[in-house]
Length: 158
Image (cartoon, rainbow, N blue to C red):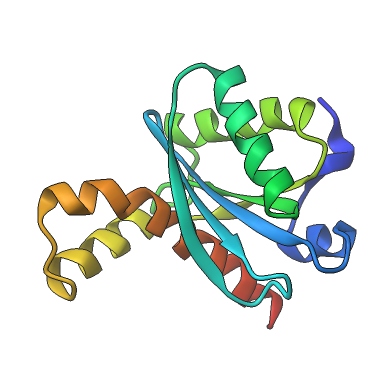
């Protein structure tokens, strides 16, 4: 594993990216990867897409296109830590995805505690936006990625 691209914190990673680069937030699930991108000042996150997962190499190709086309300088990967602070199988799977990604994509990666991101987005879409289950299913992953990335960005201001 290439540790030069793995950062302990978002603030460490942000120092390594070129000026004007954006961050790409990932909500990695077993079936999909939700995507969100920051502005070039790394202040605001916006949902952009969802990748339907197939083979790792195919997923990487899609991510590489986005990284190149959107001037991405770093990745923020949501880590599904349990409510009690432990890391279960889902968390280990996401970490492994990130470690595999480091060997393929040569930009900084930092993990971000995403506890409750998907459920917070689902709650909002159900109660506030009053969306149907089918419509929610199509957008929840990229909105969860936005929630993750915005949380990481907001931590930089503190």
